[in-house]
Image (cartoon, rainbow, N blue to C red; front, side, top):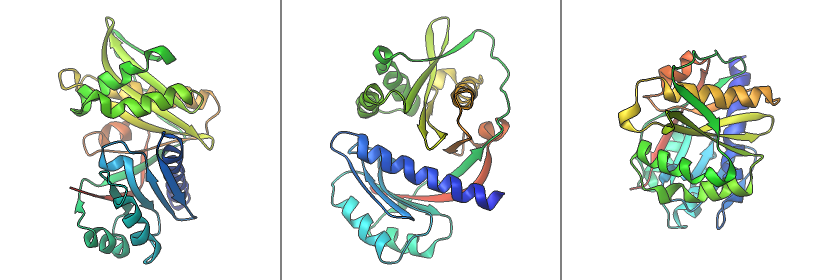
Length: 248
């Protein structure tokens, strides 16, 4: 079961990255059975790069070079321990960042309600609120998230944005990408002053719960070290650890 989930989650990860490159205006993607090169043009390393579950000694470095030539921050991601992946990343001067556990669930654990917290899906006119809250949570400019917000307005059936509020004040945000009968969880962000109160868990639970209720067969995500135990509590399990090598 774990091996099947790993292959399935890897395929979903690659499909999501290809979709983003294809859909963001000015972006592009290239894919085969085991590799995806994707450039969104968003100035964050993990929004451009090459992802591969089985890096090929010829294709992986070649595609990584084509992403580098796009002139944006970029990354190389592959399952931990791949000598081919590491050789290509080191050859282009990338440095190893934080590993990204790939997690998957078909039976999430319901999160206890947080008193006073309201989690809701954003209407199209409200999508810039995601950029504002995500910027505060990640310590990045709101403009960085503008292409995703614009894509959400153009692709409302695929991208679902959420906000968590206490007394009308936004305290967390996140989004779900609906592809191939599954939902990928992205951009779970809580501003520093609102952390450790269960808000990120609550919004993740809502994203996944809504997707399953609408017919999704499972959910997946790549976790940060900080969020890993939260996602485990929600019923996600590791199906692989991916190394993330980033440009300067």
